[in-house]
Image (cartoon, rainbow, N blue to C red; front, side, top):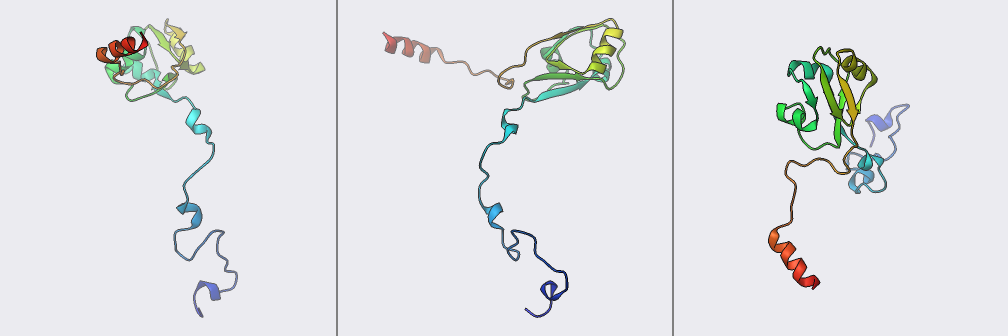
Length: 141
């Protein structure tokens, strides 16, 4: 072509540019190792949210799910220090920030760390049917 960007001084295409056609590196599937597949994802809950929901006593993941602070599938719950808390709570969570732990203990509460789950929590656990287990026992004998 005569005119256009290619005729101008200083013009150069970026690596992989194919004139507007979908570039080869975008047409091919992604492959290889990605560490993001193996990270544990924790649901963030702020200390101020615990105060807003007026939670007291033992607070664990089940309680947080019932009041709506934790939804979906996560490996656990992490308490963060945003906000203030005045009520005494006994937290049973997977992780907690240092500022959140200081605020909870200042309010007279306590923190107990529990181990993270291997797989994300599911709303409904898949249990084997009674027929399948009876059939497996018959096959074994």
